[in-house]
Image (tube, rainbow, N blue to C red):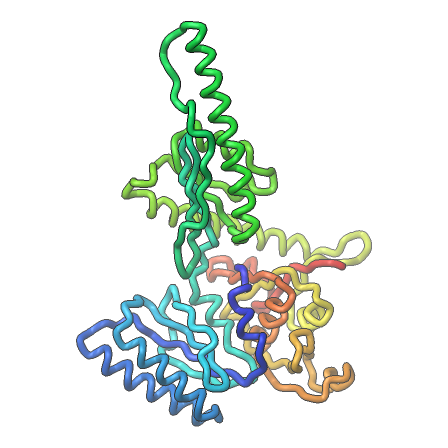
Length: 369
């Protein structure tokens, strides 16, 4: 999971209000119920010590959900009288409405409740070019159009020499356009950091583009036979995204299990357990954080300073490192902050893969300098 969308939460210091609101119920009384929820969340934050302006900002934001059609819920993260981030949820909060006031934003539940579908670029391809549509957990939008050579693009059925010469030009046009589309799609993937590329169009055009994509992107590609007007396309794209997530989760867990074994130089490519993860975070070596939300290590207490790499198992460790100000925080939230700061990713381990999950519920694949 790309954690880049969390950057706004770590560009400013805390403390933070973290609120999760269940919007799964929709009745004629919903607007009134949301008003009550908004007041309750504000009171709870006030009870925990939040400043008045932040309590008001959260209350207004929850009140504005009174007529929201969202089927699951929304998370709100606020500080200093401003809601900084308010992503929708892909599942209802299992504990219902909740509010917390803490030095760090309470983001670990968001990774489990947010849409896990990968960022996806759908390329609608024909012989003249392609349209690229970006699909993220929060939106879908057209991001690029490729216009290749427009003539000639259609074959003829005659065997006349001049017509065969014309057909060769058609072949050249197809090849040229496929190369242009593949180049543009490669750039689009780099700019959007898309996890999955879905090619839609006739067999020949799809294959021609697929074959011209760089080798590093080949395992990110899925081809669909339906045209852009097909009623089944959205369903097929979502199925392709879900399958991509499943395959990636299996591959990352397998990589984690094998990387725990030290290499001939005695270096392991993966660690688990809070002490080892804290050390990796301080050294900026976390490449991907693995989290099992119900793992016992997730809520273990660690100590954090102003900077993302200022994290320790014991408070005295931070003082030894020269950090005079420190706060207690949950291990999962502190490690997520460190991962975001170093552009690391995260993988939420599903319940069915618990046997392959890190011991204690927290682990990481490492990068080496």
